[in-house]
Length: 260
Image (cartoon, rainbow, N blue to C red; front, side, top):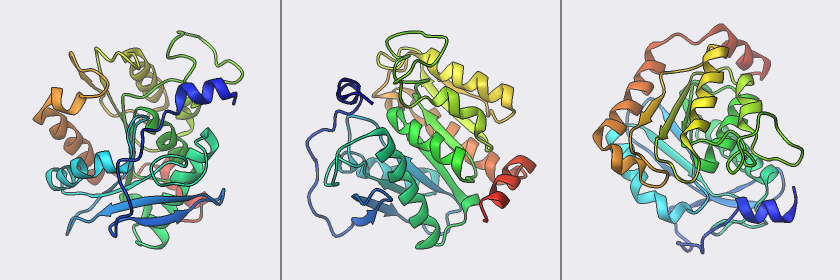
């Protein structure tokens, strides 16, 4: 990945938080140290594994996810990216994937949450690690909010993936085995809505699509506020679907291959 593309994609804000006793620290496979938080909701079934957007960090999202945990009656686990907030290292595509892998490992091995109760939820750039995890490990379902097809395809509507492109979600989504729920706004000024539509169409072809939620007039950064209560109703409906529906044979085989 060239330095120019790295600067285009990774724009960490100045850390919005300091040392906090509610944070704990994970060490990734790349030997970077990243903070994370866990919001536990008593008697909840699912845990959302949240991957945040580019221009935010844990300090900017924790209050919102305390509310979301209450509204949806779920646990919420979120982690920081390498090079963001109080993490060590420099942000890179491979580092982001190692970050979510460390978070997933902590959920399973330390918090003892079974894979069938973990739902990765990515927003914007966070959809890339969410898809990566679902491709490489079994999870019950994934939520993709304002996802990109790939980074190069944000300014250019290309038919094929070019060398040097990163976060090539369109090339990976077909290897995902769990249900996929796409959310996108029609007036997204950063990642055009056709990105979410293209990913959803690929999921339809692969038999893993859940009904997409297209927010009329919704933009990139205020989608939840613009959609209002319907946003949470649609997410809750997806989680209820995951709870009721049988695990597919394809997903079960993925879990078996992974030794779960």
